[in-house]
Length: 156
Image (cartoon, rainbow, N blue to C red; front, side, top):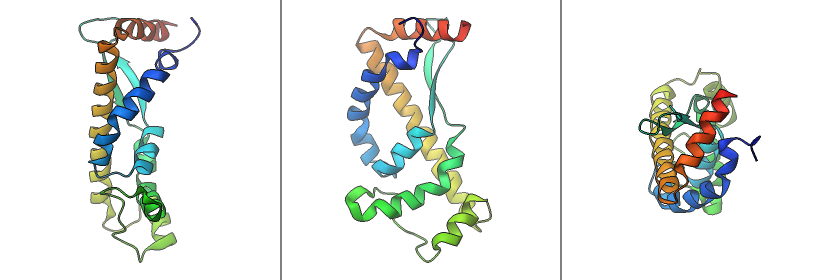
């Protein structure tokens, strides 16, 4: 097991936290499908894993910008299937395919402010998730094991 990363060690813990966190996602502006897309673009890291007092799980959302234009499409496409959350409505239904391409290229008129708001909301929610994950690991007595594995991963 020494060649597995710290993230491989917490797959079951992530599944538990996912279930516990689902009510928080439902009360957010994101649908479940949008949240899944955000989580796919998010990487979790442990800052300062060698320091038991300072170590903490953080959400690296550097790749979330790439999927922000897709969030509205996912919300619109899945809305009829019962997947639309607070942010899943179609505020720009007339735009369609061309507007989604323009948005992906950064040419989408006044959507930049909306994209910034979505990115900020996604960053806040993923950091809440990271804190919930760390709290879960601590409550299960696994935090030190995972933190030490991350320190070893970083040293390798």
